[in-house]
Length: 477
Image 1: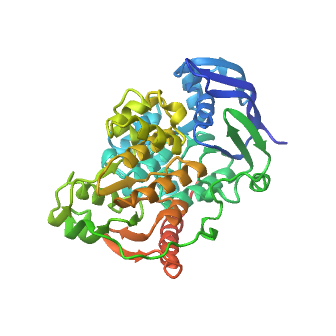
Image 2 (image 1 turned 90 degrees about the horizontal axis):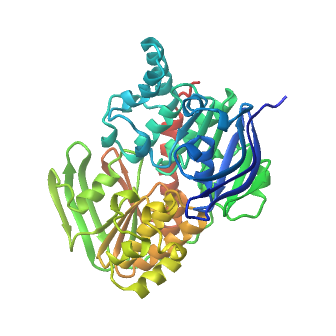
Image 3 (image 1 turned 180 degrees about the horizontal axis):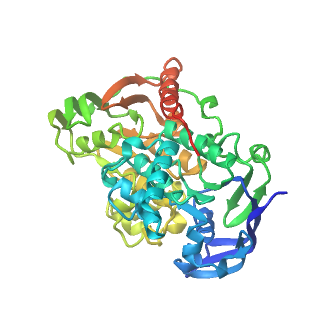
């Protein structure tokens, strides 16, 4: 007989001074289910997750009504420390949930707080390394890791006390293809061992074939699909379950204009070695490679944030760099004020916001936006700036299919007046936007090719190589 572990009846939550939230949510989740929670950016996914992990109403203020229970107990009767021993959570931004600077210390931190014996902590630490393939990340400074590597530490920490219910908020956003497929493999194995897993994500190729139920949110309202096949046949335009089957036309190769930046024989510490690269006006170059390959470091060298250990970096002027974490470069008091810091032209700003679906939020504080909305605000900043080279670091992490296509359109406009360098793990996005692909691995450029029908196999093989490297590792309970 199936056991309900989480049940929601008429669950409703509205934030203070805002009509946004979730309304009349009803569902039940069985033990051992893998649940996909999805919907367009800002639809209420993170709000529902905060209800499930107890942050609402304990931390986040607003009006909560309806009933929510876990293992037969009402959430209203449970303390936060009791919920934490049942549910593990991974937030959209892993930095926001770290308590230490050392990876090993971070993994044992929850167990220390609950008084685990040292021998038990050591045993569990070894299990986590085997499960998530993070041996090489042990005893490292968290803030020297790539975003994808930090994501893997956050995932491991979320189950450090063997929580049997796991909540993941956009877990694939910063993972390369290999690590995303490894995550899918781990989730499948956990389901086989009795874990209940709820994944909020826009990208779900790594969950193909293992989803039991889909919770689809649209403007705070829930549509429930009782199987993966039912969701696939629903007619909703979503991210692809089979990314390598995409039929996307290739753009005609042209002779590109002037060089806007170059790197000649550039090396940096033990991260990059002998990098030679030219970027052109009118061309979108996508930099791909596994987590930790040095992609963001290369971008920072172009921006003169770092000085090369050897070699030369030449740019017409400093590039405009859109960071992977929006919170690092949002300073305005409202969305529209943020963009006046880039260009003081209200009409142009409003047109840009309208194109990106942000015009209704123009008076909101940037930090009150969802992760996907913040990402689009950064795209607007790049659209309005006038620089010969614009660099994007993972511009589509956390974006639904509609927002992704809007970003593609804006980047294709940008290349008419600038050179564009994009760092991305998002295969769908790469196929839509790339003129050229540069594959970086182990600190060197392994491949540099124009994306055509004939060279598509090079792109596919590089992605599949990442999967083979990660998923051939043993996955343990």
